[in-house]
Length: 475
Ligand code: NAD
Image 1 (tube, rainbow, N blue to C red):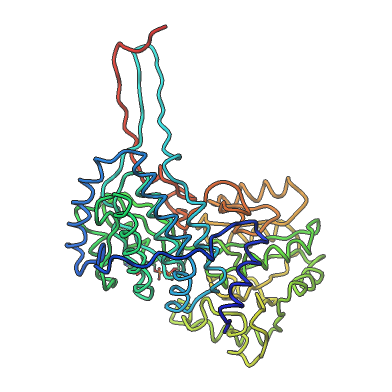
Image 2: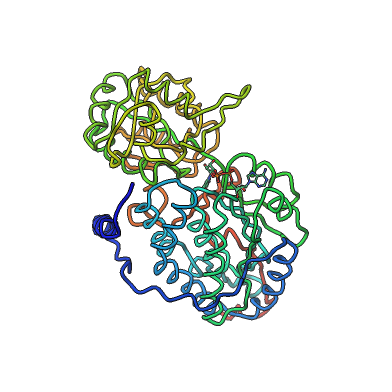
């Protein structure tokens, strides 16, 4: 989309007014005052040595200092949201600029901080016990191409709040914005009185530098946000891993659902940032008695229905088959619906959120995580068949699933069987990840295989107990 500056400001203001946030989008951004390479190193060893030194210093600071430091990151993110969003968009060519503004706002305002690190204390038969949250040290954090600066900011706030320091391994295709984010974080941290190099990375991230970090002896904890290959690689190390792996979120819609509401919510959520969120709806199962009505309802928010031959043409452009694997075409991942349409010879407006079309259950668009704004819709004979096929399409990731129904017995049954980190009833799946439209805190690292779910600072901390024997039981 080619927007003028003025159009972008108008859209942002409208979106923000709609969701009730008050970003400081027009606030003056502080000029860059430190032109040095803080936090960005040539080699993994240099970066980790600097982080190690920084950790020794960081341990001398208290919780209120950590709060001041993480507040400085939040403020920087709010102030630089336009700049960072534009850089992510231009470098990765995925998603939509205006949605990236929201992602940066959410990272700044909805990420949990030190308030999550509650101390537990009790006096019992033998005296007083206290449990507090301690840091691990240097965390190795792998970040995805789909939300590079957003994940770094979200991770940095949580990991620093828990007292750790971090070496980030960004995706090579997002290295410029990632390096820039590391420098800007260090800049505001040092201005707030923190030691240098609490957050580090290497200048030219590659698969090899990521592997060095995964296996480095000074790294005690790995935080992995990415697809199946990197999760597998991290699990092979002998370290504690918080793994936020892939998803393929299914939606089931039954005959009792409000179909217009379902279509509107799915459009907002699956269309957000062109479907590159791991939590975004990737396939829909609709019971046959309301199938046609739902397909019509999906047109109301302006989505474009593809016929069977158009769906097949798009699948051929979107996936390359290599033996048993379907490899996604990076030319279409995260692109606008109009770009997908153009690939199959259709001209549609840039404003269209989603393409959709009927497919069979075994279709590649149903079984693979497509991360683009086409959503397949499968007709099922009843709710039970919808649930069974949804569970198969989710492939046991335990990530995210949703249902639209007025029958809470059915919703509860599906929720139990889906066993996902996020399950949403009658809403868009992004409403399951906190923020203005959901409940609770928000994370860009949703750890499904290792079970932490929507991560928070305590996930990046160790519990330590101190016992005062024989004292302070005073009644
Ligand atoms: P990706 O797997 O291609 O890359 C993710 C990161 O892993 C990158 O930094 C990459 O350089 C690194 N990497 C990849 N293979 C590696 C290997 N063998 N060894 C070491 N490092 C390796 O993923 P992407 O395209 O950047 O992001 C999209 C994927 O991430 C999707 O599958 C999505 O579902 C998942 N994701 C999950 C979450 C979550 O919270 N669960 C959040 C965002 C993205």
